[in-house]
Each structure stands twice: as structure tokens, then as C-alpha cells.
Amino acid sequence: MSSIEIKQEEALSIKFTHLLEVNANCRVDLYFSLPNEMGINPKSFDEQEYFHSGILGRRSYYSEGLHIPLVQSRFVSLSKRTIEEFRLYLNLFAYQFAIAVENDAKQLKHLNEAELFYPSVVELARQVESTLKKFRRSEPSEEKRKSYFENADNYLSWFCEQQLLKLMSERPRSSGYTELRDEIFVVCRNESAYRLERNYNSSGTVQDANRISNKMLLLRRLIQRGVVLKEESKTLGTWLKKATTGFATGLIMLVVSALILKAQGVLSGLTIAMLFTLAVIYAFREVFKDDIRNAMWRRIQRGRPRWSRILRDTTSGMAVARQLVWLDFMTPQDLPSEVDEILKRRHRQNKVDAEILHYGASTRVQKDSFLSGYNMLQEQVSFSLVPFARYLERGKAKVYQERDSKVSHESAERRYQVNVVVSLKEGKSAPRFARYKITMNRSNIVEITQSEVPDGVASIESKHTGREMESRISGGSASSVRETIKENG
Image (cartoon, rainbow, N blue to C red):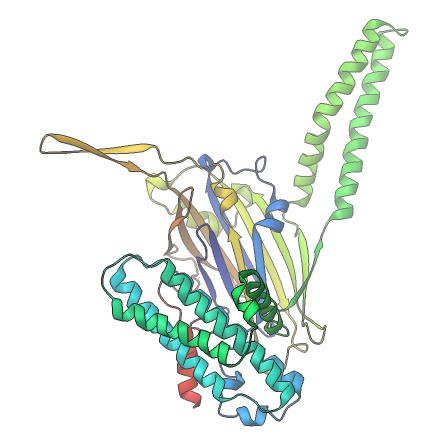
């Protein structure tokens, strides 16, 4: 059964994570309920532009640790396989571990209390240190395999150090916790010294922020090879749109021609009145031409997929999965009855007029083209809320208080609530639903909470959206990597 999760990623972005099994055929729909006061509507918001600039997706092979060679007791047998197979499984571990550390660091960044922040970061640092030690014990001796290992080792060491330093640069200010801070910095210094000892990077590269950053970006792309799927996207309905434009133009010209013939019958000869009448007719044509064409196109494309996508294995080139993608505004009449029921079950003060922005993806996963050892894909889609916040008002309200005959006031920020309903339909089974509430202001997301769906509506058993540490390796948590290492020796 597919797993779904929605959580905050950056200050104004959310990440949607979805697991897809082999031979799966599922449809996922997200319905964003945007209050009218946010100013988001079909006239002010370009769906196609948002799809290319505000939605970022990444699809990769997924494993919960059963096939990660460097945390398996049977790693020795794996080393007897081909170099290409070794590289693929090595990349899987490195990629998923990097994602795990990155996701944990993003969640810890939101801990504002020092008594929670420092122990959590220390725990992450210990997990990183332990996992890297286990990883390095299985360094291969063959030169070709060793070069792949060193690339991954170099990147993971640098990346983990950077994530810890980034957390400490944004840490809550506190006079205590000196020992915990020192422990975190010791891990960072050890990793820096380790890379220097192994001569992974030249002194010029280390001292130049641009060079080291670009080199590590290249190494990250190398470890993604064979794990992250290649995407081939295609816009659908191009010829249908051209046909609609032609039909709308022909229809308008038919009306214009009829009006011109009518005018010639009434006004004989080329007169000032005739010229004025023709000018008015052509002016009306230019004014209403685009409106009629856009109205016809929106009517024709309603409910149709906007894009198709083929996901290919970067090594074999075989198609692993195929997707159809929707992104459009929906009227209340077009909403599924369950979604309409979920959105109606809100507190009275939250029942405001809203526009519904719909994102949908129908995915069919192939069975025969999967890489050996994998049985699942992970889809991660990030939605930027920057275009949603563009028209929001800044907080101008003030709240006054009286104490001991003295009046004081505090500025209050203007907050908005975006409701997101997720629908998941797998195969021929009935769809299941989940509802999330995103509280945001102009500068960031304040809170993401999951609400219960009404009785009688099937619910998605989703992971929590809070800011606690995750428990899955690829999703990801470094703690689960450590646990897997312990289990497999």
C-alpha cells in the first residue's frame, strides 16, 4: 500500500512524498483551497508557468535498507559482482543517506528551544559519525571500485559537515550547552581532517568556496546516477489548442463578415458612416477574440491531463514508469463529492470563498524494467508557495493591552490558511483521502497540521507532518541507517 507524506521543506515550500510499488497503477490528486483574499485565480495565476517554475519533482529508486550493500552482512558477496552493479548499489546508499541527513537537518532547524535543539543536533552528529565509520570499514581494495567509493566518501563527509555547521550557524542563542556545542564541532573538525588526510581535495579547491561547492555538486550528480530516474516530459494538447484557436478565429470572422454584409446593405457606398461602422466591428473583434478563445480552450481542456512524463532508468534507458499530470483550477461543481464534503467540514469562522487549484498525477509503474533488487520508487514533489504569498498583505494590525493604567500594544501579523485535500486511488480500489491545514504569512509557513476527515470517508494512513525526526532511511532518517547497520552487523 502506498505511503504519502506532506511536510514543510523551506520557508515557503512544502514537499509531497509518495511511495510507488512495482506494477502499481495509482492516481494522486492534491486540491489546494486558496481563499479569495489571497488574490489567486485563473486570471492572475498562470498554471503552466507555475508547473515549470514552482513545482520541482524527483523520482528515484527506493529501499528501506534490505539491499544497501554497505550495511549488509553479505557485502563481500556483492563485491564479486560487476563494477557497474557495485556502483549502482553504492550510489543507492550514498544518495539515501545524504537525503536522510538533509531532511533531518531541515526539521531540526525549526526547533527554537535550546533545550530541544542542542541534544537533537548532538544525536544527529553521533548518528552521522557512526554511520560514516561503518561505511568506511567496507572500503574496497580494487582500484576501479575504490575510485567510486572515494567519490561517495568525499561527498558524504563534506555534506554532513556542512549540514551540521549550517544548523549551528542558525542555532538558538543560549549561554549554556557549551559541551554539546563542542561535541558537534569536534565531529565537523574530524571530518575536515579526514578529507585532508585522504587528500580528497586540493588546497586550492578547499580554500575557494566556489570551487569546493561546484566540485561537490558534481559528486552529488555522480552518486545520483542509476538511482534518480531520467524524466522526459511532453506537453499534451498542443494540436488541440491550435485547432481551438483556429475554430475560435473562424467563428469570430464568421460573425464579423455577417456584420460587414449587414452594414453594406444598410449603408451604401464608401462613406464616413461606413468606415466608422467597420472600425467598430473590427475593434469588437480584437477585444473579444482572446476572451472567446481562452474560454473555449478552458472548456475543452477541463479534466484533461496537461503533461505526460516518461521515467527512465539512467543506466539501461528502459522506461520504468509513465505519468499523466494535471494542473488546473476547478469549480465547486467539478470537485469530487468526498473532497467537497471534507472542505465543508470546517469551523464556521474558516468557511470563506476560495479558489480550488488542482494538481493530479496518474502513475503506472512497469514491472519488467525495474533494476534488480528494487521493488519501490519514491516520488518527491516540492510545491513553492512564493506565488501564493506574492499578493498577501503585511501585518498591520495592533493588539492593545492595559496593565496598571498603562496601555501597550503588539503588532500582529496577517495569517492565511490554505487547506489541502489529498486523494489517493490505487488500482480499482476506492479513493482514500487526507486533509492538511497550512497556516502561512507573507514570509514563511507558520504551521502544517493534519486534520481528520469526516466519518464515512476513507482515510489515508499517513505519516505525521510534525517537525519530529523521521524514521525511514530514504525519507529519511540517519537513525534508521544506524539501526539497520546494527541489525546487519
